[in-house]
Image (cartoon, rainbow, N blue to C red; front, side, top):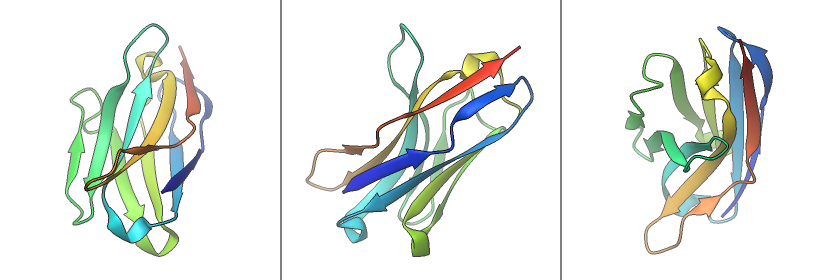
Length: 115
C-alpha cells in the first residue's frame, strides 16, 4: 500500500486545516488507517485512527478538536483539525495497517500553528 498525504500548512492559533491521505495498491486489505505526528525533538505519537468498520480512536490532546474520517470511494482518509494550538505543530504522517504486514507510512506533511 502506498500513501500520499497532503493538506498541511501554516495557520494561526484557533485556525483549521484538513489533511488528506490517498491510499493506492492493495487497499481492500487495510484494517486501520490513522494519523500520527512528530514534533521536533519528540517521538512520533498517535493522533487518531479509524478502523475499516468506522470505529475511531483519538489522542486525549485532540479529542473534541480533530475528526478522522474516510471516503472509501476515493481510498482517502481525512483529518479535520479545528481550534489548532501551537502545540499541534508537527509533521503529520498517515498510516495504514494490514494484518500480517508491516504498517505503511505516507511521506509526512508539515503543520505549523503560530500564536
